[in-house]
Length: 205
Image (tube, rainbow, N blue to C red; front, side, top):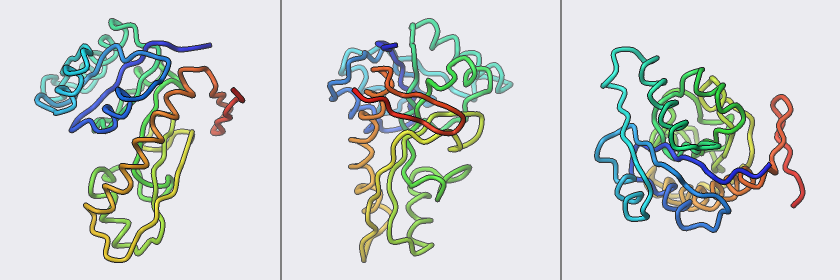
């Protein structure tokens, strides 16, 4: 089944959001939801004429209320699937189950390496360099109730070069993210992903 409407959830600058805006995916971004007021991703969305909303954790006494607000926003905009593009909150169980196997996340490493709680932003690339890894990369995966533990859709390796700093490595990995994420979103929108347990199969076009 083809899915033609999706929402993107963000927390920061929105470079991965921009890669989706600039792509030719046969599906429309119906809303951008930010966990932070003033995130530049919101500016990107406004410039592209996409509806936005801000749902901040600090505005809710309990996480359950925060999770319900996000779920209500997704349902009200008619999103058929969800893309996390630099979103820095863990989604609640109710939301994950409501969109089972229809939530995509991008992570800047080759999962299962350098992922999980605490591995975000520059922290990932710092850890890669501290470990002495020669290869890193980017992963697009489906979201489950864990942190970076869902079934993998796509991965692509990125070399770690002599003299790399976390910032330089981050930029190299981002270049891969900006092609990998639109590819995965296209596969989702075209109904070409089949999930059995932890295995994702890509159907032929």
